[in-house]
Length: 359
Image (cartoon, rainbow, N blue to C red; front, side, top):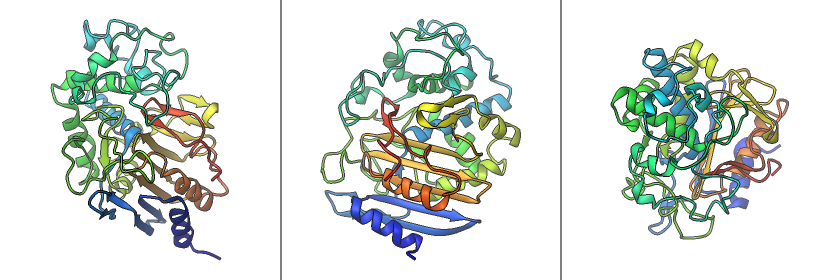
């Protein structure tokens, strides 16, 4: 019988995978492997310490910033967004609350409407990417989109809602959102290699994102120069393992807040999963996960406390992570099912998931 390492090596070789795979079981790292190039122009290899863009995995960090602020008494789940938005974004319904935004039940118009976007490697940003260098810069992109449904009425995955949450967090604290993520989430979780990085000045340890497995074209013109609440954090596989450990140990928010975050708010039958507050939930078990996909980015990190398994796949290509995610889900959790690991359709405008879970 082939070992897990052999299975992963074979899948990485046949798919041209570029990235990092890490698996922890029962508190021990059973696999940590790096493949491909972080910088193709200069032939720099991916290493276990390479930082990768995480796209919508960032939403979990945004949710934790908000929950920390709620625990600190400066926000509440029922805080109306309008109380902090003031005259900005006038098309956001006055009844939209922090909880609606966290649960993708706000009904606000999205600045990246998945129903009208083309391929995720198209140039989909509604404003020039260099103009999006801080959270407040996103207001011009968020404005002008009519409310799509009454607050709380329906689940609809929404990028804009998490940028609005970043705006609210900045206004209630007077601090930059990136600093809030660092001080309220990364520091208490012991994450040393997770940060918002500018795409036009990436440090040497950060992987450059490539549109396809065999193209030299990068994603620098496809994504905001600096991310915000809906995406753009960079991290490593080791940091993401530490993230899950710290989260469930109560080092970031209290266990009660973790329970609230992971309590199902919505069924998502089209994707064979459920959703909590900023986090994906297995359709039938207590397993949780974060995932993301952008031009030049694909990634997922799964944590199953009951099974004692955590696995993370990070890739610097648009679709590269999904064959490995699918393999690990079937291999590590065969009895618990893997149909919700990666499914059809779009995660969001900048963040499409794989077309199939089966291979």
